[in-house]
Image 1 (cartoon, rainbow, N blue to C red):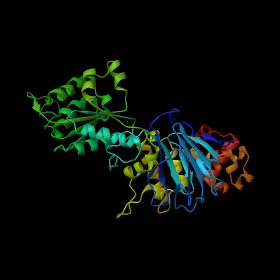
Image 2: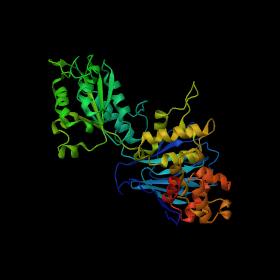
Image 3: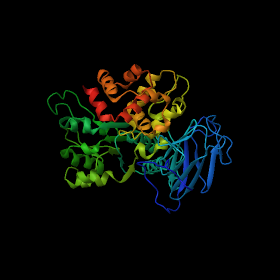
Image 4: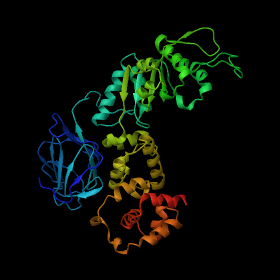
Length: 450
């Protein structure tokens, strides 16, 4: 297939090696006005395949689509896209495209539909159905559910590994649920407890164990008896307490601070970390024998940018939209452009930053659909600044000079909403003007701090 100057190689996405065998290309319809297909994952044939309202391949009831909107042609190394001179165009990574060679994680917008491509090796088919604690239909989501179920079915302790906000808390809750232990699920954030209080917090204390100990304390380990104790940020565990925790893991015995006898416990430990425990062990900051005990079962959780097709499902899990009686999916509440921006965002803090951004957008939008104007600046910038001049509106004809823009930014302290209001345009238009004026995001940030 020939391609011209509009060809886009989707940036910052893992590619599948050319000639890779066993790859299934799937298209996740993360937002689609066609209720029969919304949320579905469609396997692409290894042959030219047409999508549109009346297409021979995939027909979508989306009024913004053309009859034959675009053609996809998958092969083991990627997916070729060709827009079929559609009325409203096709977008990849926020840019309009006529021809494109796409890789794993590519985000498409066609009409009112937003889709994500996934190179699926076909593994981890077990435990494929999403759960409230572990939503998502990508291969990485299925693999995480498989590893969680495998860990829950065994008596050994578990180590959850992943960047901050990747859902380790939800995975721990799922392990506890599936293990069917009769005791409670107890949590302790290791990093949040002062070192001098940690032993009492974890193991408890007896009356008179230290100044101020006027009553006994059970401690988190005994609170979790017959249940599960989650130790968040285990890499922060003080060195002098690591041998004591190791003893609990090995012997199921705990001695409260100031106590004279060991107490038997039955606790399943689930530790989580975003630190490199191997590096900490190498430097002597974390005991190797404790690490060996904790990593009997390892569950690795992927970042949101590595599983873009799950982002809107994860949004429903961390910030449900309800009117008191029924839930509305975020895929329905977001406009197509806003959904595209949310899926494209790299979310550096994963679920935490996703929840914060959507919580703010929900408050700004009220009862209206959540659009680009309600999203944080960095999301809008990622989509808008990537677009070429050919897509700009006639408002560009009255684009203000750079000095005018800088003066407005200075007066409004970099607040884009206020700058846009002054010029009588949408905030996205201001971002376009900044691009062509050569005003970088760092300069805008400087105005905010002035």
